[in-house]
Every structure is written in C-alpha cells, then in structure tokens.
Length: 391
Image (cartoon, rainbow, N blue to C red; front, side, top):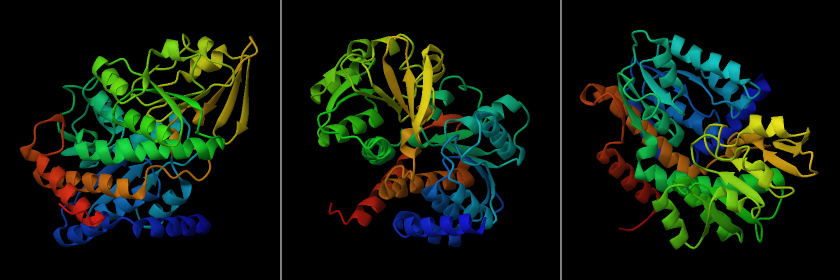
C-alpha cells in the first residue's frame, strides 16, 4: 500500500505543478471556504488530474466521498486520496456490479452536493426515492446530460449544472483534448500507424469533430457517419467523406464511436466489416458498441494484449475490439486521458460551478441547466491570461 501511495503522490505532484488555474482556485477557496460543512459525493474517473480537483475542493472545506467510473479507476490514485483522509470506493478491477455498489456507497454517505459523470449518482437518487439531503450538483459529460434530459427529466428535485453545456468545455476539452487523446490512445494501445489508414468516426459532435480533425492532421483518411442532417452537412463542408455506417462498414479499417448513444455499432453492421477491422469507443458509457452482440456472434474470442481482443467468426474473418468497448482514452497501459491544460480548464469549470451550487443553489431552478455565462467568461479570461494570449 505504501508503494501505491508513493507512486500516486509522485504522479499527482507532476500534474499539480502544471495546473495553474486550479492552483489559483485552491488559494481562493482556502480563504473563502465555500464548501465548509458540506459533503461532496463524486462519481468521476479516478486518475491523477481528478485528484488535483478533489484537493482543490477540499481546500475549500469540502468533505469528499468518491468513487470512479467503471474500468478507469487507477489504484495508486485511490491509495493516495485515502491516505489524504478522503473516503474513496473502487479499484481498477471492479466489476459492473461492484461499481453499482460503489455508487450506492457514495449516496449512502448522504452527500450535500453531487459531482456526477454519466448521471449515475443522479439516477441513484431517483431510484432511492427518499428525501434527499442534496442541494444541487454538476454533471460532467455528454452522456450524463442526455440521461438528465431524457430518462431522468422531471425527476431531479435540485439544480444540476451540466459542465458539458459550456462552450469552453466543448472547445477546450471535447474537441481538442479528446481529439488528441483518442489518437494518442489508438497509437499507444495498438502501436499502429495513423497515416494512410482509413478511419470512420461515428458522430460529429464536439468530440467527433476533434477525433476527425486530429486523425486527419496525422495523415489518416477520415469518413464520418452522422444521423443528424445539420452535423452531417458540417462534416461534408469540413471536407470529410460522409455516409451511413452501413455504407462505410466495408471501407473503414478503424471505427471510433463518439456519440453518447447506445448501439451505434451493432449486429447489423458486424457482418459488413472487413477482415481485421478495429472497433473503439471514446464515449462515456460502454454501450456505443454492442459488445454482447459481438461476443454472441463470434465463434471464438482471444485476448491479445492489454485492451486488445480478437473476435473470430465462422466465415473466417476476425474483428479487433479495443478496451472491451469502454472509453479508450483511459484504457491500456499507462493511460493518460485528456491533456493537463484542458483538464485544468475543465476542472476549474467544475470547481466554480460547484462553488455556485454551494453558495446559490436556492436561486437556481431544479433539473439540468447550462453553466451561468459569468462563470464561462471568468474562466475564459483566466485561461487566456495563463496562455499569455493578447486580446
């Protein structure tokens, strides 16, 4: 355990030193103590950058009760946070059932504020159906926003600021950081070339835009499958081949889903894929690729390497799946995720949004809602100053 704590401490020390926006927030929170007497319940990827966020919230008086997301928890980070006195559930090897128990453990601690990712905590509150101590919260990602405005609409009795609605996150994190980290993760996990390879990106939202942009920048041949006419029109004008997934299935060599929706690649597509096609997902939930259907249709499955599986079929073809359909950005050996600068911006957005909940939740309507404009503009000013950009 001491080795894990030491490893976590050393990794976090480097990352903390390169996140100046959160350093500024820690100093301000230490003076203002906006979370004094509050317990923040968190479900978010537990990796070093998240640890710096939790330190920042703790500097403002918050008590932390946290768990990671399924499949992305880093054990040395958990060990470090526990050593710092935080209540943290979960490990890298947790099953999906154990993850559900971790979520329940966070809610059983009766937090005052939620820091959610994928709306797992919000859905748990609704499922419990009892009087809640929660005054409000934040939601980090596209997939969680979809759930809050879909299956959970009208069920949340407190305000939730959706971080993903911020144009800052869309540009800085979703487009540029996810785009960069997906390409890096593909190369790290597979050790394959990008130049000259045919990629199909499913979805042309902010994340899909970034993935397509960074693949093309490194010489990839990129096509986009998008069901929304306006986004498909934008992709076409940006110079990408645009077609249906069925028509692109035989052309593509690598397929990357970036939609936030389930069953983007399903049993109707698998028979159309070429020999050796590689499937990967960068969305939050492991549902964009129908892995159960892929498994049931295969005649054999072989684990080739960490985060690489081969599915063999009776017709002699095989298909490669990365990270078992989970988010590839935090999969494989030594996962890095999004860039430090983008997460410094994104987690400052989290910090100031949680501060707004802690101090002014009673002024906000219930349910999912965008980040207040004054927070976006304040963070943009700070980021420009940190970049040395002239205006």
